[in-house]
Length: 341
Image: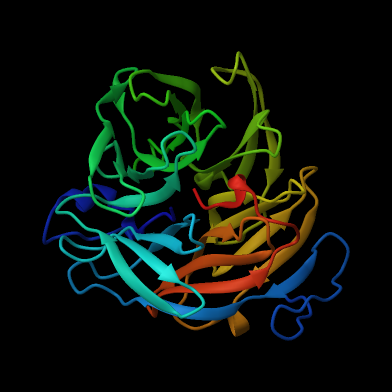
């Protein structure tokens, strides 16, 4: 999830006063790619698929996140800033360019959505209330999967990554509003009964994704513009090592959510610029995904989902102009780690 204006994330809990602190490379035509100077990668131009939301009068903004494909090939997104009664989880048919509401409630501020490989339910992270909520695969049957403190502190859960057994790994963006490096990575077992802090003293961790072999986690730290790598041990219940893997030269933009394709490439979303940067696992910059002409009124490209087994990628883009989905051709095929977060 992007950092919100004035960082007033606490206002997400106030119903009715929800105020959210909310270089030139050559391009070619739709989906086109071109050669650029060494070290900068090429530019991929994304194309608009559809507008999903407009700015909400109640909150003063809209913010799409967490794109994830269901088993029927429909794309689910969340609107972080949707007020009570407005769709907070939305299902899109990107071929027909239609949408329909899946879920709303009176309090949740959902920053991600993921389908569990264990029970098939949709899992949502409620940033404002420190909870993980689940829904039936088609929507409905809301349940609180996890709530309360972890090691004496409530989470600000941002993104979710599932391991192959259905355990959850969560980027806990504690410290975002205070500007303190007190963020964490939290593991919650698939029953929701055991929560463990795997890593702490992180700089507002936002994106989280497993690598292709499920041996480690890529973590984007928003307020330091870096991507860290956590090598896991103990059947994923401990961290064997941790290091800064990539420093992102984003200018005024900051690192948002992250996804990984079948070749291990990292797709790093940006807050402050409607673009994504693609790196390989060795930290080499391969490409930048841009909206055409850096479209006016679009300020972030938060996340991406790549079609499972295919290369068509759909990224969530938002700003004063509204919330949109843009598409481009990814560098490799989509896998579970490419499916939002």
